[in-house]
Length: 181
Image 1 (tube, one colour):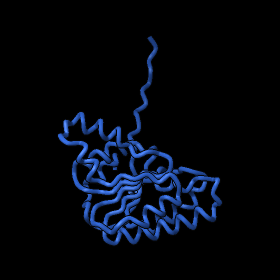
Image 2 (cartoon, one colour):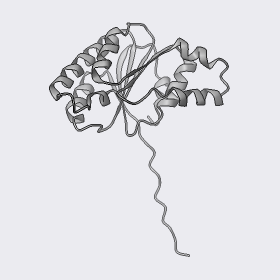
Image 3 (tube, one colour):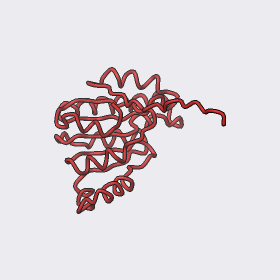
Image 4 (cartoon, one colour):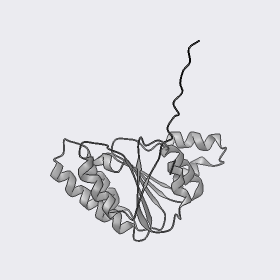
């Protein structure tokens, strides 16, 4: 997989828990813009990073989408500044058939001001809820590779419960040998 928008090429209404591993999280605004145009969905931005609504709006404006305001009103956009808020949002998320995207899922568990044991308990609760939601809807968890010093504790368990793990392969630039003039 080369870009997050390729998630939309997969059957959106097929239930399952999909973990997408990215190197830098680029492409979230494009994914949001494509989701807005294609279908209804739920979108949660993890931790202190914001929902890239402004960037998505600019993408839609350049594509001359007619009623952008209606598109944003019909979809659910949320932000989870902490792991506790992510657990609360997931707890009240209904088992609708529309796809759910959660960006920076593991980033919500990197706050070292919260004891690791507490973060891990909330992580377990979030995983159980995501897995329950994935019984009836597609749940896409977007994770940045190696993010946070506890990544090695959280990611293997996330990988184990996932129905599918995808990795965004970034294009490597070809080396160019410079010549002397």
